[in-house]
Image (cartoon, rainbow, N blue to C red; front, side):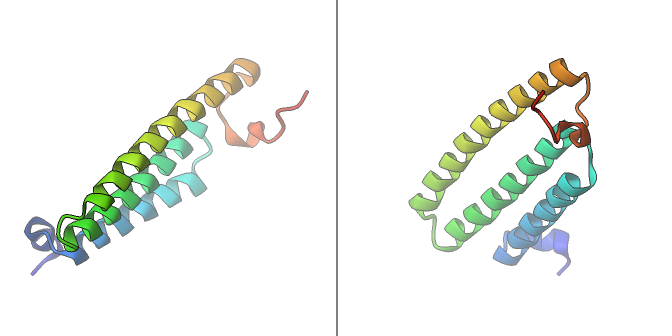
Length: 109
């Protein structure tokens, strides 16, 4: 059975592999990119990877309601993180005229 067939079949290993792949892509984006917007997108990918793994384990346990409630809590936290992060990026851009993370190391002037 190939990985694509396993994903379509819905096995736990396939979902965990997908979550791992999303997390690695998000981590690479955070570590490699200099743009703060791309780094925030990487963090969002990592949060979504955690959500995929959480829901896969909840489904594996038989449709656990606690896993779904925790998933909704993570989505709310991710939305707040995105709003605060975007506000910080806009404030940095207004102050420094760039979104380069290397220039964001000192915010005091």
